[in-house]
Length: 134
View 1 (spheres, one colour):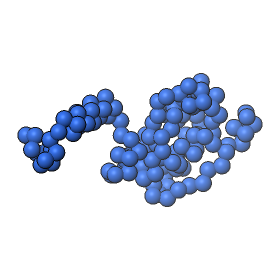
View 2 (spheres, helix red, strand yellow):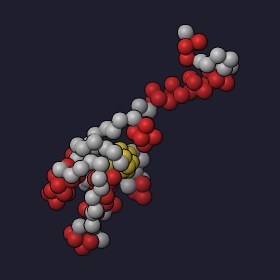
View 3 (cartoon, helix red, strand yellow):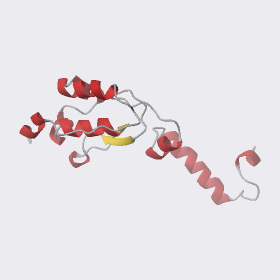
């Protein structure tokens, strides 16, 4: 069994320890990383539901406001989030994908994005309402 996992001549304590640590880390943190996404087939963006060819980690609560959890979304949705919402709004109200989609203007932009080619990229300008709130 060990011969199938370990290359011949590599059965050392250090190798086994590193292999076990790798298994434990993967068990504790099963959420895919950006590296995993780039190596494998594209996952679906939880916001626009397109194949995620350009993954981006979005802090659901901004780091500047103490947020630690991230969601891997497509780059277009990430730009749209920051074009529509201030960090204060993201912290207080819009810190889940469902809450983001409940905003009428943002949902309208996501509806547009969901019809676009997932391999391309769209330009996003800051929303005029957001500029007024800053």
